[in-house]
Image 1 (cartoon, rainbow, N blue to C red):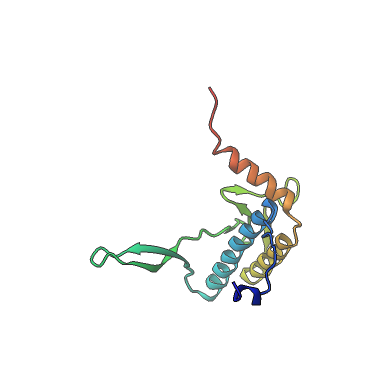
Image 2: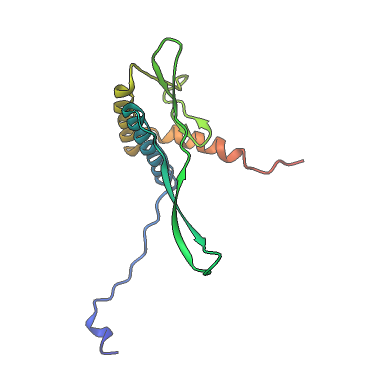
Length: 148
């Protein structure tokens, strides 16, 4: 026991993140993918997000880590006016940024990238928490069991 007496021991409780912070982090990560996708599209490149998966080798029985491409859908489209319209999404639900307005119109790809970064910083600051909460509730309601 003399070895443990040399250490400084403390009692600690790990802090849990609130559901609002978890939803905010999830949307921020997805916006990061959209920013990277827009930058790649502006440069004429193809963007493919990576995900890590563990697979078991059939021959040796060894588990190894493999990087796979993950599909990322773009959240913007070109309107008939020639402008680019961006819709903020949480899962499959489109978020109303302001009451009755669910799209952000920009002139070109450079402005789209700047707008995505601006929206990402607004999400990180918690400015869209009520809208994210509403979209999250609507998304969860779709998974609820229907009562007869």
